Amino acid sequence: MKKLFALIAVFGMLFMGASIFAQDETTETPAAEDTTQVAEEVVTEPVAAVEPVAAEKEGGLAVLHTTLKTKFIEGGAGFMGAVLLTLIFGLALSFERVIYLNLATTNTDKLLGAVEEALNDGGVEAAKEVCRNTRGPVASIFYQGLDRVDEGIDVVEKSVVSYGSVQMGLLEKNLSWISLFIAIAPMLGFMGTVIGMIDAFDKIQEQGDISPTVVAGGIKIALITTVTGLMVAIILQIFYNYLVSQIDGIVNKMEDASISLVDMLVKQNLKK
Image 1 (cartoon, helix red, strand yellow):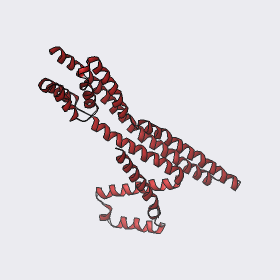
Image 2 (tube, rainbow, N blue to C red):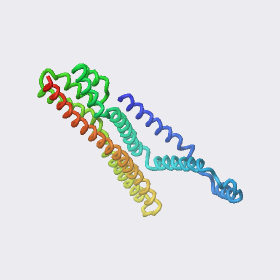
Image 3 (cartoon, rainbow, N blue to C red):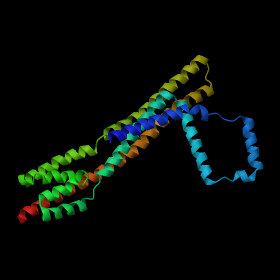
């Protein structure tokens, strides 16, 4: 999982760098005469006006990509780069958690049935073998409980509760970092806005007059960082809430399955 996180982060930073360096090649706009000529050609050629849907989608994505890169440069590479890094690292951690939680999800009903069948047919060792061959925190908790059956039901319950807390900690790993990136992204955006406003007022002071062009341009550039920071926070917040809901579901299954395991072991002892 650590290697996966590192790969996602590295690829994200490489993509960010490539996008910035490619900005010079994609931001060149045609002259007014060329635009007029192109418009006239489109009007005079009705066949060329009807384009496939796929081409329109590709063109829309290209325009969106170019617009995002342009706004990134306008907002300032310093603060915009910092906000983008929070997005890259936050998404890397989120993807790592999503994969981990999907792998940790287990069909507890099926596992309980297999463990009960193994207990009836082959005893505790057979049930432990079933747990060893099953992935997920529920199987690990079952194994810890079955490993201490000889010490009594009370010890099994304590072992299940203690190891359940350990597994819950593993499920919640890196969530604090994601919440940190959610908080930092808007702060960086607001800081970039404040610094941009200060720069705009410095230009007004240098000119000695309030020019609408200078004020509007400075404010627009300053607010770009705020918008970007809020967008990053919203994206990461969605992933965070999804991860929390997944963890809550897994924990509930762990608790229900643990109670069922203890009841199963009590029945086995009564049979003996």
